[in-house]
Amino acid sequence: MFTYTLSIDGQLIGVESATDLVGALQKTARESNFAGLTVEQRNTGYQYTVRYRVSATPKVRYGDRQVEVEGPVSLVQSGDLLVYAALPFVELQNQQTGYVTAHAAAVGFSSGAVMLFGKEGAGKTSTALGLCRWHGGKLIGNDLVQLGFDSVRQKVVARNGTKYFHLRYESMRRNLPDTLSLFPPIRTDPWLHKVFRMPDELGIEVQTTPVDIARSFLVHVDDTLQGLFVRPADGVVTRLYLNENFSRYIRATSIALFGAELEFLGYVPSLDTEELFGKRKILIEHLIRVPSMMYVSGPLKDVTDYIKGHIN
Image (cartoon, rainbow, N blue to C red; front, top):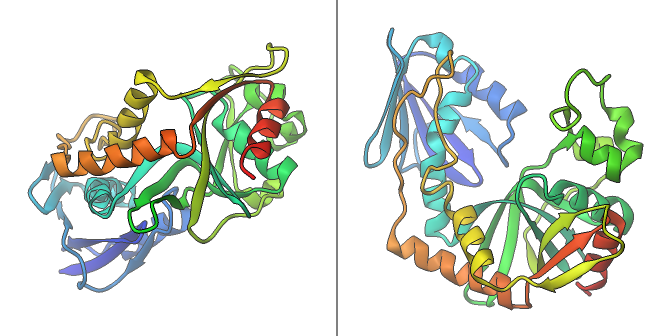
């Protein structure tokens, strides 16, 4: 039996297999989109386990503290499937300590961090880029951010996030045209034409330590507006949006495991509880009210200037 310990966002998950998977898991760790994924060949310190068994028929079954993955070796050779299988247990441990995985962006400054929320295509990535490149911010996370509430200091904290950018050609053309040299020749719809780039390729520094959140914003980059539209974001719609955002991983609405033909391999259960909901409720209230979250819409430069001017 081969045994490994995965560390994802600081949470430990065991991997047990009769097949040697160290090469696949280490490759995933080197190329992973997950924050701080590491692999060690040991079998101590974890409460949750991913067990892999060679089988002709792919299948996934979740239990109380383990998930069993079956299938041909080719199914797990990239290592990604086993990491994705571990994610519900990772998020459970995160939320038990008061942290959530948010679909958001965060940028750090000396005065604190800025949280950027918004639906897909709203301009979170463009705003994060603008704050980093024009105002000297450091990237905490783009796409996924780990944030939580420090009950002792009564502060919301951003502690980690994914350190990469998926740049959309159409968004960059309108908002940051100097980045278009990073794209290969366009052969598809401009909205679907995307490239993966690391912060150093864009001249951006990264934040490597946790930082208190100074302010949160709902952003909508819209270059058709003349100037800014700004208003408080406190309301039912914002609370519903944040509740869905912060529960999408613990309830597994954003996690699915697929086979070689993109078929669903099995049911991924919700691990949510009333206690975890209570922790998220406190986090949401502080994000919205301390100080008040604002909705900011307008051209990118105006949006970033407004945000930077309201966090000091």
